[in-house]
Amino acid sequence: MTRLLRISAWLPLLLLPLGAAVAPVSAADNPPALAPAPPAAKAGVTRIDPTFWWVGMKNPELQLLVYGPGIGQRTAAIEGSYPGVTVTGQQKLDNPNYLVVNLRVEPTAKAGKLPLSFAGSGKKLSYQYELRARSTDPSRVQGVSSADFIYFLMPDRFSNGNPKNDVVKGLREHTVARDTMYARHGGDLQGIVNHFDYLKSLGVTAIWPTPVTLNDMPKASYHGYALTDYYAVDPRYGSSEEYVQFVQKAHQNGLKVIHDVVLNHIGSYSQLQLDPPAKDWVHQWPKFTRSNYNSQALNDPYRAQYDTKRYNDGWFDTSMPDVNQSNPLVSKYIIQNFIWWVEYTGLDAYRIDTYPYSETKFLMDWGQALLDEYPRLGMFGEAWVGSTAQQAFFARNIFAPVDGFKSNLPGVLDFQSQGAIQDALKKDNPNATRLYDALQGDWMYEDATRNVVFMDNHDMSRVYSVIDEDLGRMKMGYAWLLTTRGIPQLYYGTEILMKNFSNPDGKVREDFPGGWPGDKVNKFTAAGRTPQENEAFDYVSKLGLYRKAHPVLQTGKLMQFIPQDGVYTYFRYDAAGNTVLVMMNTAASAKTVDGTRFAERTQGYSSGVDVVTGAAVNDLKSFNIPGQTAWVLELKK
Image (cartoon, rainbow, N blue to C red; front, side, top):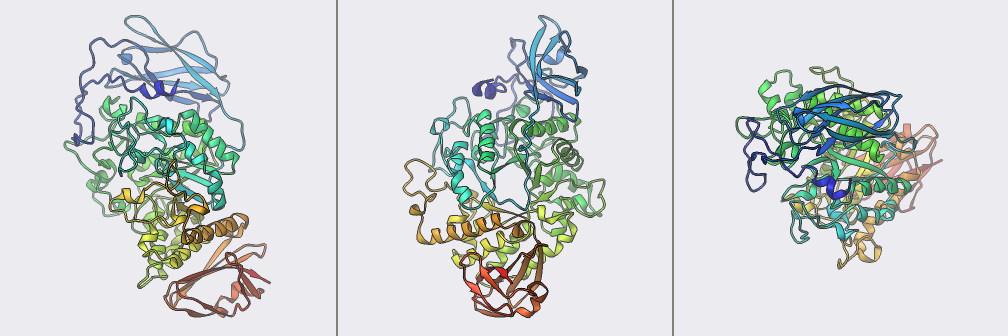
């Protein structure tokens, strides 16, 4: 199906009032009230989700959500025969424009066009449903690990590689205005491809764009977190086929791709909200009810059920209806979609937005289904919570199940260490002990090295502004990011000292200078950067490339020493005898550090070399480290 046809498949709305209580929303942000269907709708199958499928999947069961005028009044069957595929059942929904058809695709089934028929009053309807052969490429779906260095970007704000897709007819937001904070700015997939070499020069091995799926909202659609079509790439980034090519090109360049997803909610202009298949497809309340945004109730032994329901079932925002994952049809629909994206594109990992807000049973089912099909698939979730224990609850941990929930998510975004590094980099009263404490709780995780460490992101003030635009302290942050345990993630522009406070958040989502034709400066090049920006870029580049070439910083063990007098010291080391010492003096004044307390890690070594500057350190028994400085020393025997 062509790109425009693919997008428009949901658009001919046949809206039937279902009698469900619909949460009231702002007229400025959201769709009008549901209207009756046109009286003379032409019969036919408008669309089927998943849009196609594969033979040879480990789970042979396939649920089709069929959409078309009055399709729910018909009976589905396979015309003739298709060896290895059977219809095992079908289910009518509240909305007669939908029909659920269940298939069983045996391992013996062959790829081809599955002839489906839908019999009822009037002419029988036919649909050729495509079954494809699975990929046999062993390099697909590589996962992510502590060997990677992630670059996190917003495609709309990074680079515009194809101005022809800036405006797409038929979409609700169809203008580009770079001088307007919440408008589309025109960045796209080709813009990212154009700067693969830039990313590789930093030592980056994985790219994480914010969601690329269709976000056909009337405003602020640039961020992607209110999807309106589970099965389409937003054409302002490129076609779905171009996204497949994007993943392939990334792999050819030694770069992995992380696909950002939202399980908890959809956009209010999704067809599944405008013309819902069933009354309970999303959570309904007598009046609009937000989530309480407080996950503590999920594992509080003294909790009130009201609080857990409000957290899980309340809407994230007026324009983000909360999907009812306790409905098995909804659960199956979502699970199949994210299996579909992996098989279709060969992506390497999922980052899951608002992970704790989804229902716990669904999270276990979703994670298990994906890992059953793709054992190497990487997954890490956003769990923006207040403590290490609460954060560990949402990752694979050592605890017994709580109310049956035992997370199978390999890792999480490490907000605890993120808060700690910002505290350590403060000009006044820096707190180095928080860095130590953030890792001290790692005993709760099955494997804390699967957590993603970062200094800032699209939802918070840029770290360079938080630390008063001090390059010396910024280098301390870079050093920590690229040497501590876990998977480092850098937010786009942090390497060139992009700044601002998230007041509002659009200020930390500005365009990367040089990403658009006609930009006055091009900070993708050394010539376009200021001397200070080049100093920052070069520091990240040297350390990032060193990390990429030295597995000791990727998979080596970590030993940390309790901070003393504002100095935090830790080591990365491996069985081959490679050892890197990292010392951070968070105090304003220089400190003399007694190195003999590190003897269990320095024994057998006589000197060290700063991996960034090349400076030699000839005495490991005593260190004189300047104020607000980090050293990354490769120890020598």
